[in-house]
Length: 131
Image (cartoon, helix red, strand yellow):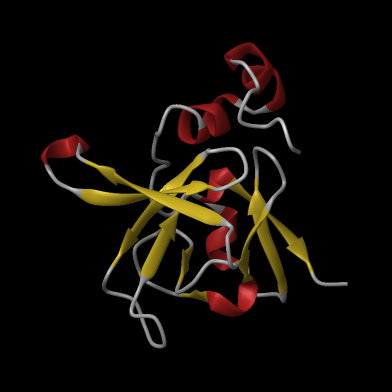
C-alpha cells in the first residue's frame, strides 16, 4: 500500500477497530496478556494490522513473560524506530516502516542472537500462517 502514510484519520478509523486505531494511530498500549498472538506458535509471518506489511517471521518470536508478543528481530526494512520520551522515561518506539503505525517498543534485554526484545502490541498485528 504505497499511500498508507497519507491516509487521513477518518480513513484509518474506517479501516481499523477502535482498539487498533488507539494503538496504531494514537500510540496506545494494549493490556498485557490480552492478545491471542501471545499463544501463536505456528510457522508464518506477523503483519501490520494497518497496512498488511510483513513485520516479523514467526521463527524470531520468543516467550518473554511480559504479556505481549515478543521477537528478537524484525524482517529487514520492516520497522523503524524513534525515541519515546513519554511516561517520564526514554524508550525506543517501534513503528511499521510502511504506514508509520505504532507497534510497541524495543528493549536491550532479549535473547541471542540480537539481545533485543521487540515487545509488540498484538492488536497492531495479524498472523498469516505459512502455507
